[in-house]
Image (cartoon, rainbow, N blue to C red; front, side, top):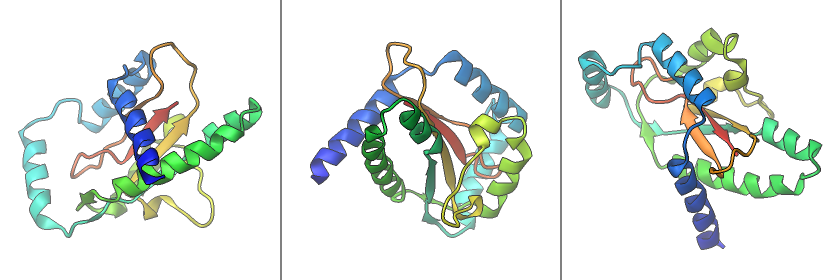
Length: 175
C-alpha cells in the first residue's frame, strides 16, 4: 500500500511540475511578489539567505492544507467520494514535507498573511478546524477545484514569501 500511495503522490507531483501555470494565477503571484519586493532577487536577498542558514535552530517544516474549498465543490457536484482520495494524498504530502527543515521566525507568518488577506482573500482566506491556527504552521496551502483547461491534472505555486528567508509561506493548489 505504501508504494502505491508513493506512486500516486509522485505522479501528481510530476504533473504539477510539468504543467503550465494559468495566466490569471501567474499575474496574481507576480503582483504579490512585486509588492513584497521579491520579483527580482538581488545581492541583499542572497546575503540574508546565507545568514539565515547560520542563525536559527532548524525545525521540521509544518504544512497545512486548507481543503475546505475543494471538498465543498466535490459535495456540490455530487462527487463527495473523491474527497477520500485527496485526504490520503494531502496527508501523505504533508508528512513528506515534514522531512524538510526551516530556520526562520514562524511568528512573522501570521502578520504577513493578515497584512495581505483583505486584498487576496481567495489565496489567503484559510479555514481552520479543531483549534488549528496560522501560528502553528510554516507553510499554508489553499486547495481548489479548478476548471479543466485541457492540459494539466493539477498546478500549484507559491504566493506569500517569508520576509527573512524568502521561502514560500503560502501557496495554492488547483486540481
